[in-house]
Length: 123
Image (cartoon, rainbow, N blue to C red; front, top):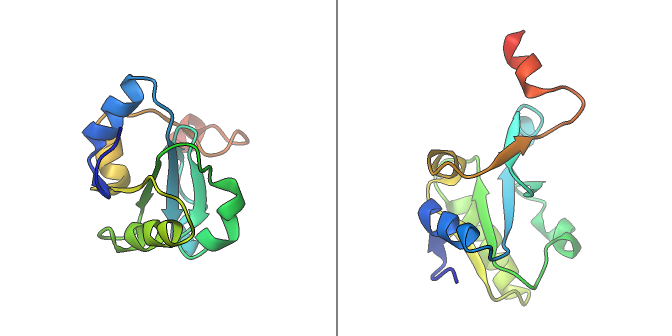
């Protein structure tokens, strides 16, 4: 079980290693949403100010871990607080965001199946 609001990538990795389900929610700034090549495997991706429009997509039966591409963790903390105020009880923010996720060696997948990331990288 993840403990506390702020969690480390290592805690998320340990949680995943034990096969415990969780839902990662990536928050992206409007102009960066289409430029990213990879996302956390199985994650939901929303624009940073659109969490309330996507509540029906966020499960209640597992821990929710937010991270953002914005500097600091304020955006993730705001989203976590929104969910806590709306009845979710197992909500967290990932310290260090996507960079920490990648550094921990956690799984990623291509954002789009239309254009393989390797092809884009070679252009």
